[in-house]
Image (cartoon, rainbow, N blue to C red; front, side, top):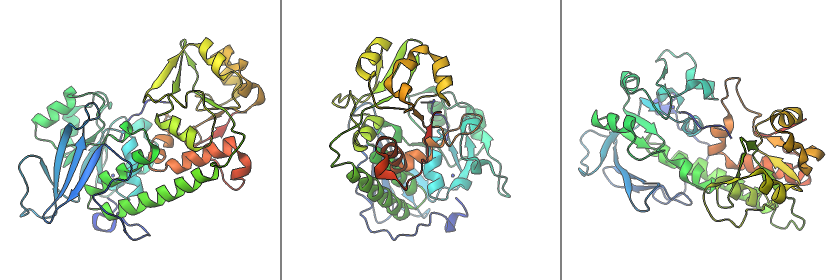
Length: 368
């Protein structure tokens, strides 16, 4: 899958609208482990936890609606709803789009690979600035966007750009949804985003709809007796990366009712394999998903060994590139993060077409 790169208030007080009323407990996460939300009479406390050391805190935020609200001194105080945001990961665009908050974005990293071009729609309010690459954002450009906060994905502890922004007293919002391995846990970070826009009830309501849809799809595969087998990825310079069973895609394979060779592997990372091992373990896999090609011919040209697999010979090969831009933006990394039920629906349609006769592929293309 492609490198994740980067990156939201329709009119501030009229955005964040959802059809269903809020009915949950705002302080209670159902799946996500990377953050916590604790309401208080004068403020909302939001905690972002470290993805490297369990229990360690990256940042504590005190979100207030009034300048006169009293807050503790051990965190970052922010007035909500945020009106000016710079975003460094395209995965965050999906959350902001779902909540109707795209117009709060004033800067993005690597705008060429952002799928949702609404971010850059001309507006009477402002233009959106290119603030460099997500791994090495341009601090000077970020400052020029005059952000109330910068939303980042933490790929390394204490990276230079983040430390520089912190030294300049620019609030950093650590949105680390990518560290969650459960698809619903990753989607639940919409609640984290919603808290900074005073949209927690609406974010929780939307998340509830996603949970209901995902679990209904998952239930369809619960009684399957003959499970079809699955493989993913491709051979790249002698190494083939397969998701472990407890990774994001590994969990999706399980919930789609697939038989998967590494389903019992409880590690949370992709497994680097040699081509010989892949052939041994996956030569007879029924379907192949997530390949980077747009046709069987292209896949064969990438590596002749790709043609040795049963799934290639039977034409059961699929990518996740149906919703892409010419520059490489892929909605799989934006809407897909918020709506894992769409990915699960695609996988079920691939594996068990009879269970999804009325469904259409959302992210998936069948290679011809």
